[in-house]
Amino acid sequence: MVIYGVTILSFCFFVGTLIGDILGKVLGVNSNVGGVGLAMLFLVLIVEHFMKQDKFSKLAQDGIKFWSGMYIPIVVAMAAQQNVVAAVTGGPMAILAGTVAVVASFFAVPLISKIGGNPDTNKAQKL
Amino acid sequence: MDIIKMVTNILTKYNLTMAFMMVGIVMYFSYFISKNFTKNRIHGSAIAIIIGLILAYIGGISSGGSKGLASIGLFSGIGLMGGGMLRDYAIVSTAFGARLEEMKKAGLAGTVSLFVGVLLSFVIGVIIALMFGYTSTVDAVTIGAGAVTFIVGPVTGAALGASSEVVALSIAAGVVKSILVMILTPVIGPIIGLDTPKEAMVYGGLMGTTSGTAAGLAAYKPELVPYGALTATFYTGLGCLLCPSILFLITKAILG
Image (cartoon, each protein chain N blue to C red):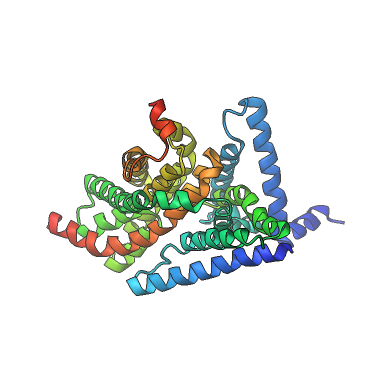
């Protein structure tokens, strides 16, 4: 049934968020630490487990696929409720701080990706 | 019969389902523009996100609220659809189909990228705050934390007792960052060669803003979304941990 997939997804979401909240409390941080990331890891592990046993019906998979298909529209709705006015009217300092941070972070991506070797040999050959 | 009032009533009463309809129309329109006017060179979802941001600006200006289009009652469903709950739920669902092997391979680089990402944005924020005359340690650190994300800024400001003006600036810096990541990822992605799951995980760890990376990768390469989102969701927590504590003490020692 479709709901089984949705249930697995929600269960992972719940466990991830709970552990993220506990991590935040333990670290004394006023925020959830990595709850969504942990939920994603659980989902990957559970899906692999059920797939191996061939217990994951097509319909149950559709229950998860529906939400990942809704991802981009949800992101568009998210964009539509950003506080763009605050960003534009935040003054030159806020704009400069945000911009330089983003540009510097972008150019650090290739540098840090070198850590632990380059798994993508095709790309290395192209260069 | 007041048809306009009836329409308004439906939009308000069934806000979430009506948001599905509105966003669907925006998506169709965006993909239409992408195909017919840019020959698919600009991805349809990138156009949709830009339209979303423009609508957010219009909504914010016309209502005076802080939630963009969702500040207007008629569009409150957009707030539900794109709010934290469904956003995080959909992000988790993208992990379906992601490969554990790829995540393991990038584990070390991804972890390093988180620490470098927080530190890099923080230092840049602090330097720019100093350049603009915010020379007290509390002010500079709060603005630096805002350059990490718009959540870390106010959390740090509250912990250090910064003024509300400085906290507002730190939020603005974080929002600028998040929006720029959305817009710039499809532009800079090809330049820096953002192609593999590993690079996406490093990118998520460096940028850190969940909304920014979520939208940026969606507009660039949707298949990379789960990898980027995985690391990005640890970033804000790490920032909230480091900025008001170690990074504050180090900054204080340097600035005196």
